[in-house]
Amino acid sequence: MTTGPANPNHDAAHDAASGTPGTGTPRTGPLTDLRVIEMGQLLAGPFCGQLMADFGAEVIKVEPPGSGDPMRQWGSEKAHGTSLWWPVVARNKQSVTLNLRTEEGQALARELLATADILIENFRPGTLERWNLSPAELAELNPRLIVVRVSGYGQTGPYATRAGYGSIGEAMGGLRYVVGDPDSPPSRMGISIGDELAAVHACMGALMAVHARHTSGRGQVIDAAIYESVLNMMESLVTEYDVAGYVRERTGAILPNIAPSNVYRTADDKLLLIAANQDTVFKRLCEAMGRTELAEDERYATHAARGARQVELDVLIEAWTRTQALDELSATLEDHGVPSGLIYRTEDMLADPHFAAREAIVSVEHPEFGTMRMQNVAPRLSETPGSVRHVGPTLGEHNAQVYGSLLQLSDEQREDYRRRGII
Image 1 (cartoon, one colour):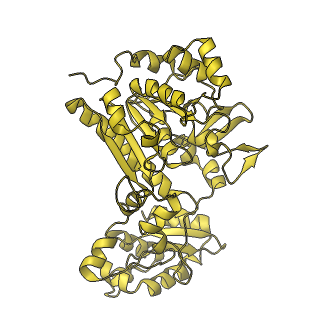
Image 2 (cartoon, one colour):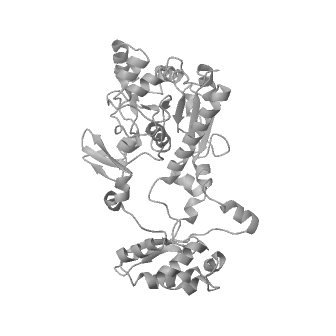
Image 3 (cartoon, rainbow, N blue to C red):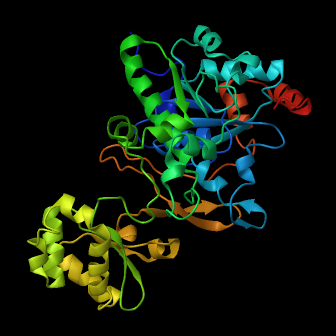
């Protein structure tokens, strides 16, 4: 039984050595033997593809001719009309254009998928089936193909065909209700966390399926629902209600009964997060405060006792933190082994020596901006690390390489397809 890529003609060693066409930078990481076709748009599917590309997979992104992925225009900040989100979420990928709403486009898609290990899509359930690209049809074409399907509600159930966005999944999965201040309506995080959690779960599922394929020789379908990906992160929320009737509410900067763990003001009116809820760490905090007796006080000596007096304990601690400037306070806490940290903004990250030493942020060449900085690959692998090799490609940048070299279409065929809006 073979354990390599889906297509026996897919020369993984050659692809790993040559890297993405046009960049001259070799692909590195543990996934260099995998070819991924990404048909997703916006964030949930594409972020899954980004994670795979970061670790060396050959990711070929399929986009509609003319318009491309809407993420090319998205982002809260733009420069000269260019999205600053696209270079990150599409990094390390190839871009080809293909009209999947046409029979000829669907035929080309099947040719691509016959060579692939993984398909990523995040269309509304039923879309692949309408395009004659259902998992069952693709399994006949390529039995080793793993189909990753990301959607708001999953591929089954009464809500499956509803339009689903990350924000709705966050609400349905329970996250929105517990985020924010108790005296305000449910809030949201400042990032698209629902889409991103679904992407991480989808990537995890795909790599599990790759592992299972070594034994079974067959691919399978990964059904990653946004609301379930959010629900999976909700700790014991369901069990607490089921067993004890306890409902978690919005609590702002704290978690109920976890104390002390909060943000405290300093003498120079800065904010510092201190987390000392464990018994031994609380004892060290008391030593730093010069109040060793608090660690033996029955009101604060145990985790349960501190949780019951969370508000009064925070008042007591902030009365102390306000007597020291930020730098002095940080040094005192560090000397006593008490976890603390600033509430970082981007400028703090860029100036921080720890970020620099670990290369947590890297500089990447961009055709318009020269150089831009973005987050590096995570997590770090000691033997087969991933890498950021190039920013998101221009629309259809790799049509010639993919359709010409991989699918062996002639120049005349490609021009005919281009003229008729197929590619």
